[in-house]
Image 1 (tube, rainbow, N blue to C red):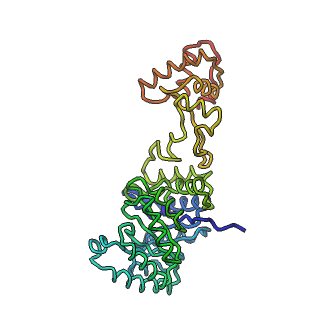
Image 2: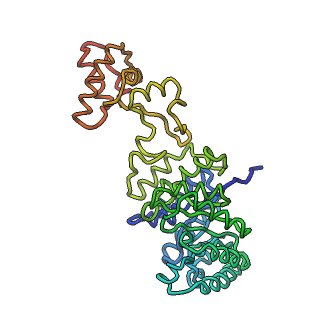
Image 3: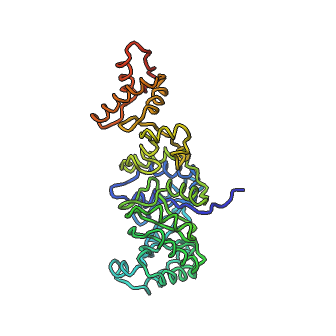
Length: 386
């Protein structure tokens, strides 16, 4: 019998991820992303916004008909017309979102706190009567009055909601303050608590981990950290962070994550930075001589995260800061055994190349350096140069 994960991941790549400016997934892309997320063991997916129109509703329905093992949720404003659009799509969970900060209540809705509580009371009951399990999305919770948030949670529970979502909508929170706020909510309600973090200050993952440790039961993520503005908490960072730093299980296996990461990157049309944690092209690469020497002796010397956990492996980069040990290792992988003096000679050529072209040499160029210095030597097999 499978145990219940300590923290439930609700991945919103297909909702908040697609809300990134300029991003639009095709139906085929949505289907592949959903299936790959399921294959990793992600237990919940937020898959769209029915109020966007008939095309969106039809695609949500098609995703629901795939027979995925994951629980499916849709996002809606806390309005009767939005709720009505969620009916008949084949999903069981609905997130009903409403602003809870005085800033958004006055500046966006022109309403007050009493309106929020009355709307929750009415809409949650209607959603329950329609057969939905309801999560209350507390929009802009990070700028809301904390006493009022506790009242919102109490009202939501009395109306029949099963979960509240603490949304750091504009990404202004930091982990220590957030942990205290989640602890207070945890003490005030029996509802499940879900954290929704944005990365405007680069703290989405840190805030998500803090929320989980402080008592949140669910957390929102997106593949590669895709999302509005600076993005959301990245699925890969949150899963490994929870497991490696806090010993919290999510039931998700990221060893085959790379194809999903690449699919979302291509579908979004937004290339990942080379230094993006865990999935960037260069994040498991090593050039500095002292690092490479230590890594080759024992990966634990310079490995905080095992790249195999996300289907990656270490890459040795030859450049300005390389040492002879790295040159010997790279050429050995190309089928050439070098002496120490040969490595020193080749390192000089490599440094000249990098200074001139601002990139590491390709395997074919390394072969050219070798044959130029040592003409008549055995050629590097073509299979190793590809």
